[in-house]
Image (cartoon, rainbow, N blue to C red):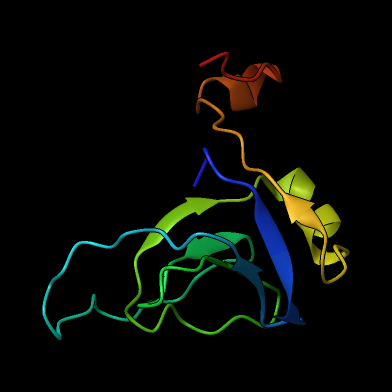
Length: 106
């Protein structure tokens, strides 16, 4: 997720922002998926096609897809305004940096 540049798909709305790019490789669990559970806006799930979806304010439960990260709360509004074709890069932020405002240098 963090080593690739993603493009916002035309299939982006209040439910989710679908991203295009080189799909992520998921571990094969056969036909098994995870139990569905509620998610907050900004959760990033990976459906079977390997293309991440950033859940929006009208986002459903995960549908059993793995959730691999979340967008920082202060960045959710920015993500929601990204137009189709916008380029997106994710940066890993250490949990302890959230309290200090400092980002992880790794």
